[in-house]
Every structure is written in structure tokens, then in C-alpha cells.
Length: 327
Image 1 (cartoon, one colour):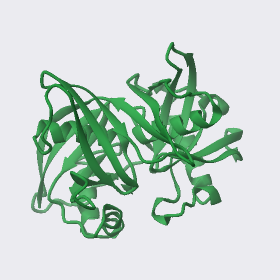
Image 2: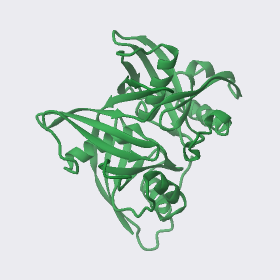
Image 3: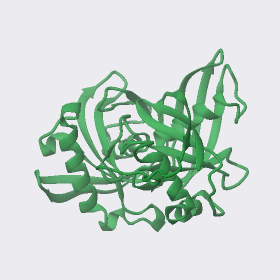
């Protein structure tokens, strides 16, 4: 067994791109369901877990799109399985598609890369000047508030949590509500409470969506309020997703969820910009691109950088063909 990958990072969060992985289904959503128990899951484990990856690795398998309206599709994966959405991955894929020539681009303008993901059809709008990528705008699916003000008893006391959909379901609350700050020295405690809240609300009725394939809480967003810039609110967050993974970026789909919630509360108005920082100090900028009957269409801008390429092999007699996790 050997697999070639191209690795990128978006605002510090890894994204490992893999082509030619066998997946089956008429749509990307169907391919994800099949991949969870199919051959692709073994390839995910091989490439994601130690010793070839790590517990915070993230990546995607390139697939066909659902129809000719998409440039391609993708199955997003992490150490625990396949996710329904990924904004930082969409940003990386926009850069990858333009840099590799998979999607012909305008070197002095905007190129729209259309990608089918399990939660729907998204876009990476790649803006270039002189052939140099200036930034990439992730245009997400409709994002909306599912329920506000859910009272929850945790190991760190009573909290009030909001559930929001941004391509995946997120629980969100201030880090101060559990006595923490969004800083690297609090990472272990943020992971612990993030996991606790995710599993406490995973079966909550408001986390069960019309499409059951999107149901359940994907991650917990703990945020800190940094006031306002001249353009709008400024916040720092950490998203603890899957079962204890820490997003190094401000989390693309999580940022979309924050846009939906701040739009609903009136803290983010049309024309304003959410400045959204990560636990390591990297940044996304986000705004309301459009409003719908139930929520908003968010746009999140960031930048991705190529890390390198690798070919991973399974050596004869290797006792760890499926990798391992210590978390």
C-alpha cells in the first residue's frame, strides 16, 4: 500500500489532500456514508493517525462532484471519522485547485472553485494579483441558529449553550463561562470541557436535523470577546471538534456558525466584518453575504499555504498498519 499526498495548512490547521481513493455513491453525501465503514476508512486511518499523522491531523479525499456544476467533491476526514463540512479545508482546496491548474484561473482577478461537500455545495473564491493568491473567500451553505439558551450542568458548573449549524452542528459558549481563556496554556482544559459539552448535547433534539446524516454535535466553540474594530466585532475562539481535536485555525465552518449566531443577536450587521482569531493568533475575516428565511449565507476569508508532498508506504511486517491514537 502506498499513497501520495499534498499537504497544506490554512491559518495553521493542516489539510492533507489525497486523490484516487476509491469511494462509492451518487453524491458526496452518499460517498461519506459508504466511506465510514468502507475501504476509504482504512485509508483515512493509515494517513491520519500516528505514526504517519497525529491526533490533530485533518485532510480530504478528492471525489467527483454531484453533477457538472461542481469542479470536484471532497470527503473531509479527521482522527475519528468523516466530517460533514470544513471551511479551512475548502480554503486550502481553492488554493490547491488554482495552483495545480485543476481549475483554470484568472491571474489578476477572482476564480470561483465550486466544491461539493457532504453538507452541500460551497465555493472557494480565489483572488489573485499578478498570479499571486491574495486571499480566498469560503462561501458556505446556509447557516442558522438551532436553539439558544440551553442550560447545561458541567464539571465546571452551570453554563448556557447555543446550538448553531454552519455545515455541521456546533455548541458555542464563552470560555469565561467555564473559567477559562482562549490561550495556549489552557488548551488541555479547553479540550476536556469541549469534549464534555459535545457529548452532553450530541443527542439533543435541536442537534437532530432534517437530514440525519448531518445530525449530532460536531464540535464545541469556546470564544472570548475582544471588543470591536472599526468594522465590527472582534473575537478569539477555539473549536474542539470530533472527539478532542483542536482546530489551530479560527475554524471555517465554526466561523460561519458564529456569523449566523451574531447575525441573529444583532451583534453582526449587514456590511460589518467579524474579525475572528484562533488560539494560535491566526485570523479569518467573515461577513453576512446574504440572508435567507432561516439564517444567513456566510463568507469567511483566509489564506492557505502549501507545506509539501509525501508518499506514505506500508512496510512489510509493519505491526501498525491502521495507526494509533493516544487521545
